[in-house]
Image 1 (tube, one colour):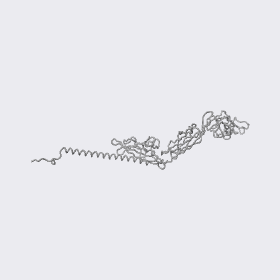
Image 2 (image 1 turned 90 degrees about the horizontal axis):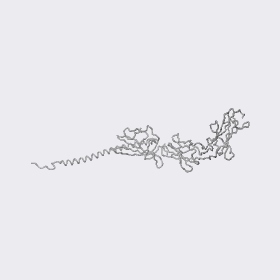
Image 3 (image 1 turned 180 degrees about the vertical axis):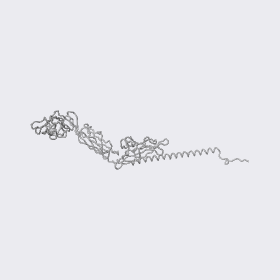
Image 4 (image 1 turned 135 degrees about the vertical axis):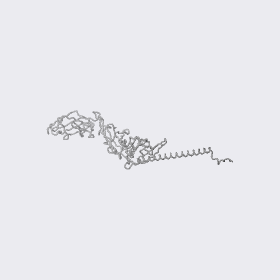
Length: 424
């Protein structure tokens, strides 16, 4: 006899089984998603850890390098929003260009070596992932004005179509041997006054001295572009002299000139000059104290040769011409006296007048003799005895030089005669 089957004996229905399987699927799906997310998070953390390690290594490299080698070359064009880039040279050597393209297919070049000068952009590979670096090496200063270098290293990498990045920074003060907090510069000039003179005959203007030079001396090596400034005596405007300096001692001393290109264009009056320089391994800049040079102009029509005479009192009572010399040593006998009566000059111009003649290469300084008697000039004299020679049978013309420039040429040619001792 069959009895009815109770629910407890009948088991679970198909509907209940399907519901249970659905619930299990939902739980397993959630568990799988959590597992995948956890694994992805672990991978993210691992890559981020590598990125931080790479950034840390790069910071350590910058901290351990020689101070003068921490920076970029001008050719790197390493502009930065972080500040003024540190520039340590003009063109990066070929041996430090890095390997490009990257051997692992990364974005930027691979460093040439661990001790190579840092590249602004570089890629490294770690555990199959490319890490792209951008370095910033910029100048900064503390509240006391001490200059230091600030490093910023940005590291980025790709993960599942996204670009992730981290950033580390550090600062470095100069090594004791490179500390130039008290960077200073001094300027020396070759003269403290320049006199301009215009030749009334030719209209040309000459300067005495004929050229200028400046020497800038700094307390630490300076960059290759110190510049001399000058201040206009009338309007106070500041102008760049524009001369390119040279240095023979690694940037401690810079020489400008000698140069005559600015003469006679500089204005009349007291012109102040100073030099501006920047230290090689710091943003420290310095200005020298001002040096004053007085520029003066003579009235253009006031200087002229009134007369030029030669005097040689001979035994026979005659004077020149001709010029009489000893036939043995070709020296004037008796002494030859040369006088130039020059309008517009006085005893204060004693070092400005020189004479030159045929056969004499270098002008010879004449001495102030006396006022010319007319109240507007002076006589300048040169006496020639045993110090110069003339060639018998030749003819000689004479010149007047003013401020080391030809000022006047005589139109008279003087014959030279050679005679025995006492014959003239």
